[in-house]
Length: 92
Image (cartoon, rainbow, N blue to C red; front, side, top):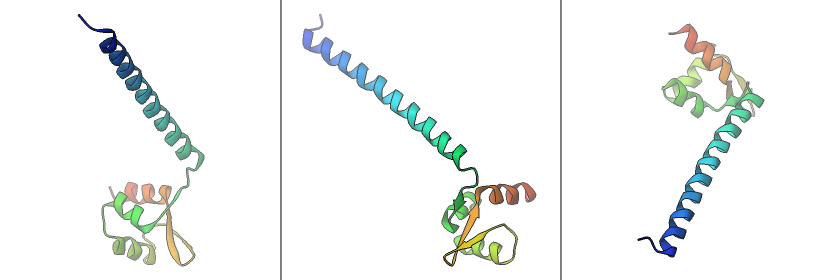
């Protein structure tokens, strides 16, 4: 037979689990909204390299050789997510 304390503990654990699930769901919605709010997100060389699965220097060379679209901001390359998608579509 469960004691009162065990029942309250079980109830609290269930509430925590439910709240955790709700928080995770809200985080996913927020991330989706942020992506939609900024479809032309500009990525760093490092971020682009991770997506393309190449080294950062390779991304810089791709920019220098106009193989992928980029902008230069403050002397640093910035690549639009859409430019990376275009590059991948052309090379797959």
